[in-house]
Image 1 (tube, rainbow, N blue to C red):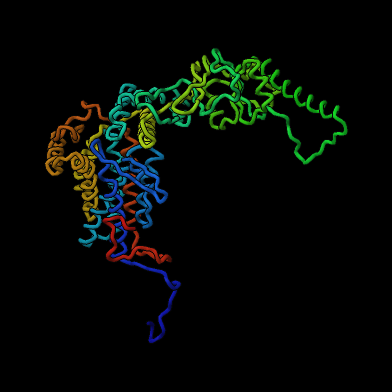
Image 2: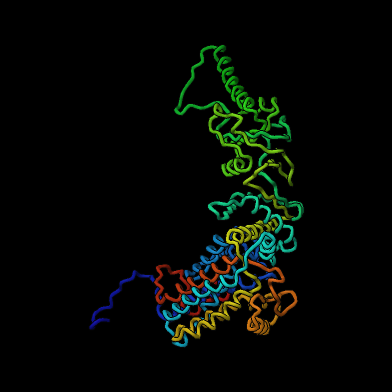
Length: 537
């Protein structure tokens, strides 16, 4: 009330508003709940989650980004944490769980500081200083990568996933696939993972998976009279229909006697025959068409022994062009021998219950395919996710040319260095930097917890090893205690760790700076007594 006047309402009816400490506590609780939801999946001994959507579809995975994407979360602060996982997945392909867990721990530590009456803006400033320093420190711990290390990077990414049992096998495929499509542009290595086409088929075992030096098409030849396989293939890539052209506008042809009808049909037949003749004259014995192929044209092609596929996807056409060296032709009249791609073999194979076409033996393939197999649909889906992570980290490590040791060794080393750095800062920011350094230890602590080890003893052993200058020591989840990760060949790309720390600190700062939540939806969770432990958001 103002001077005895009626109160002034500036927000419409039904709007909910939470301010001050309760708004911060509410947001931090939601963020911590999301971090706790994925925390148990971290590391080689992490467990999987089963996610069932409203339609009853089941996803079984321990991939942080997939779990958070599938969870139906409403709380706005929790959604900000999910954005961390999305960003991490897009830029680094791995480390999504680590990034989310670090963000949750940063907010947990900051809550303790807020209760000690340290102002949120002071905490934010300290976190920014710590984050910038951490980026500098990462460079001092990086190791130059060589090709033998790439396989170890892939194995590290696959460890702890369903594919962990065959990590050597899949790591070898992922490294060979990445090296096949890697190109040097202006002195820098560039890897476009879109050039690696991954096809998944259930049935068989994971070890039936293979790398193809060419392209796999989930198609079959258009006519049973065509050969099942063609050696020394000359491939025409055509982006126009091999059928009688239709007019742009509605048109009628009036036929007044049977002779005219016969003549009309003969002309259609001649036109289709001429198209097939042009393809044959170019020297092509395989046709991949992006549009339709008329039944009569199929018949003529089968008679000439030409292998043909119709309605290929645009992405497949582009991949075939890169793999075979052929050019995509829009007008068949312009097709010449110079436009043809080459492959040592094109064949139709039975994979599981469906027929697939394999274009193999491309001499200088800049686009390759990987066929992933697995016993059930859920297994194949999880293998696909694990393989995508492995390819991604190999590509990132190869592009950046540097890696870090894993097992929580680098974050433990940075945590120790940040504690020393904090002492020279002074002021209340020092408390925030120290909180940041302690928060980073959540990674080795969680690795130890998930492996059934004593987290307190593990952190003590880790700090002792690092104080003795053993900066590559991390958590040994298999035998307990700590071990040299460099000797154990546990590596991860430096970009993964750097991005995880940066995005976690930026999001924590953003959430900390919020002191007022105005929601026009009545479905917003109540600020007091909200059930975040069960993720009832």
